[in-house]
View (cartoon, rainbow, N blue to C red):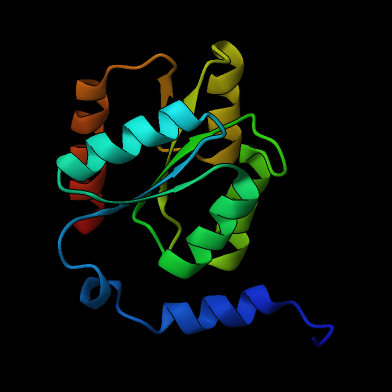
Length: 147
């Protein structure tokens, strides 16, 4: 392995690929949350709603999926092992040409609101959240992104 950083070259390769050709059936949503029940629930519910969904158990695995898959939206937990939401947002800013919309999902209350501002999140949902509210939000986020 060479001493160079593989992320920029991977990001450049992915940037040259049309995601519309790769994933034509629905917006791509990456769920990054360390709680298995939340990942499983969101993955199943969003797939039933017509989204292409991938899930990651922490920010580090989420960053790998971000670079491989280039989601339209990321549902991001803030406090996770291995890589928390702040570092994940930094990877988004430094490694991809078009930053996905980040929706922060957190139980931190007012601290999460401040964190959402710091990482440039598009919206915040407090845990526990209502699935219908999330689906409405995703419709707005993906419609706005496509416009």
